[in-house]
Image: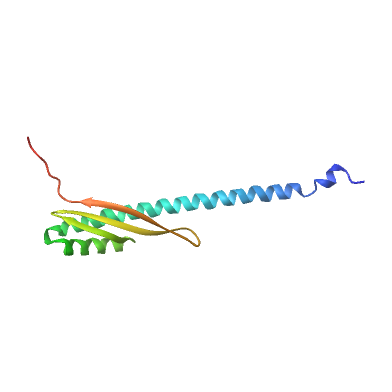
Length: 122
């Protein structure tokens, strides 16, 4: 007759495998969150730099300002989805493709505005 120790044989192996799988899943989840955050920061940087570059050309009109903004956004890994020039102000919307996990694609979005600061003296 087999003792109770014989029935538990191999249980520790299954337990260690389950714990290891939990650590791998947690690591993948944290890596996905980190990738998403990096994508968000990349989108913000591309939008900020594109808006600043476009604001320098805003005096020449929307086509010149948006063309320059687009060059800077693209150079920083983004895709410009909207560019609006109002006077000397420019608003740039940017989208960056993020792959948090293999086979999963998301988009991080950001917007930035640049232009002169108007001070009213009363």
